[in-house]
Image 1 (cartoon, helix red, strand yellow):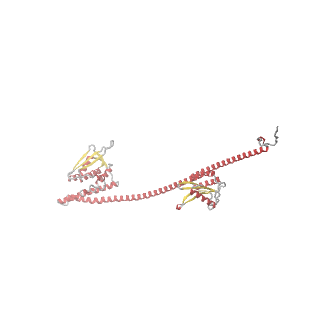
Image 2 (cartoon, helix red, strand yellow; image 1 turned 45 degrees about the vertical axis):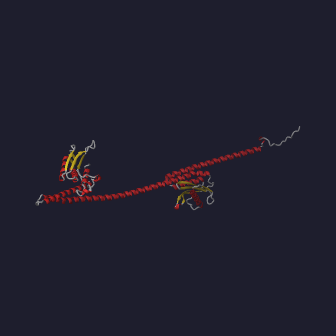
Image 3 (cartoon, one colour; image 1 turned 120 degrees about the vertical axis):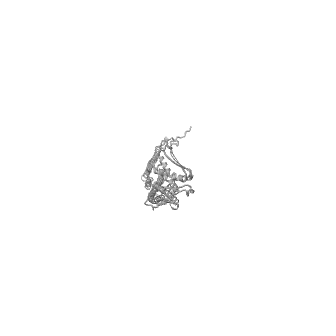
Length: 455
């Protein structure tokens, strides 16, 4: 039987246990290297995570400080400068700015820098390039993240909207490690804070402007009130002077008119008594007309002067207890001659409940005489007039009020004139003015005297 020779050399199919000592050592070294590499990577990742956490915390603290400082001081440039300085430190950037795109003349827009990392070096090439790139990012409202060898190593511009067509931009440049997505994400809260601060600043400016306009309006209103008060004071002084002059004039007229009129009436009475010799019928008739006209003129003068006194508040009432019966009969006797001349019958009716009244005897008699005379004047010959005094009984539980009514069968008052019968110098229809004497002051005086009696 043939046998193959057995070789002592190692076979390729030998199990792992057959590895040499050198192979085991090499495998162990390889695995150890992989372990240390993984451990180093994990440590680096933890360091990066801790760094990001610290950056976020520092950034949040800076943002919180910016908000707080603006609320307390409301100095936007200083707040943005501090915020930009903190952002440069956190990101390791060399240059940075925060600006606002504002409209200029001819509808052009330009970058207005609110905060800058190099305020004392505006002419530097890198700074000029930074402002150009920032302005382009703000105008186009697009984020720029480029490497620019022309003056800047690397640049990032993040625009933001303030309100309406107003926009702003946050720009950084020359960070050694560049601006990756993680850094851009870190900067987003800063962008939002800048927008919020700019909106708050604009609102504050509007509020201050509104307060200034309100203060100006108040000052203007106060000045107008002062001017108007001065005008009214001057007008009141002129009015008081005019009233004083009027009172003095009426007092003078009272004397100047009454004195010659009383002289005329006295001489007329003397002549009528034939003291200087007998008179014929024609002379007696003329003297009678003179006396009637003089007495009528005296009544008119008295009425006008009484109205002037009432308007000036210088007419006082002398209140006493009066007999209504005697008062009415006395008033009728004063107008009896006028009524008899026109054959007018005057009737009196007094309510049994009306016995006495507290009033000014002279003025209440003046009221009734004016009403009766007015009724006689506008009542045709052969007519009738009624004088009625009665209680109203309109307020249960309250003292009764007296109502005095004068009715007649005359021409009456048209509806369109009834609301004006108490106006000064107001009379009835124009067609009747020529046939009736008087100035139209009788009812005006009646109205004012009744008002003095709280009627």
